[in-house]
Length: 289
Image (cartoon, rainbow, N blue to C red; front, side, top):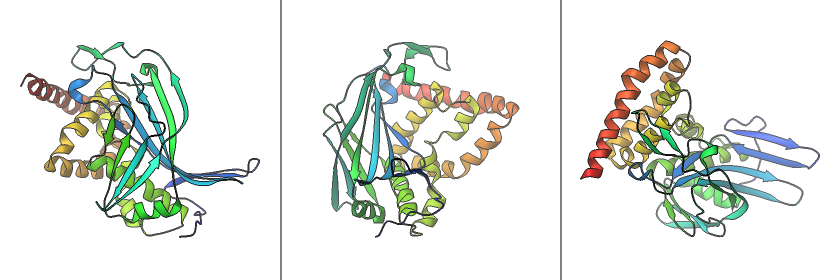
């Protein structure tokens, strides 16, 4: 397909720099993949964030998947592969190219959770992060088209220390982001109905109601609920169906809650607080087993 950027992008943001003769078309949204589980918060872990864009200058033209790892220790992503599997038949291998790395504050500090006990930081904000690895993977437009045309994709992120494999939700999120880019990059309507139904997956990582109630996506309670979703709920068929239903109706409820102080308090005391307590009990029982 020939690149023809939509004049008014629907699922991407378009920026032009006439002095550098540069065009950037960036898919709205990103998502994180955890390198720790709910039951191992105290261990060294982190988050890998993925997003996508198209960049064109006088010398280069590339479709890019950006990565940003924030964690308690280096995992060394540079030079390793991102492998995207298409319909269980074909693999596309992309090599990580490092842009930057940095060391921040020590992340060994303690924070209070909803139940009043202390635990190690779960990277709730940048000040908790000790190391950051930033880079990207390059796709050809043809590879992008192949991935977007797939009925199902799965992916694996390799580093020197760990291997991150997608689950059903993260695979779908990557598909949504890349199809969003494809839609506006080629002025195509191929995935229009799909994106109308699923684009909220890319605009956030869920927990809409908890986020609205707590006032922050990075609140430690919201982070724990997201990890519970990824590490427990999404490993069950009924949990996947429930999550899909939640993604459909959750944002509307969250908007109502977010705009009302009374609804925030009601939601916190009647939904978020009891739910968090139950989850804590489930995982504590599981660990004792």
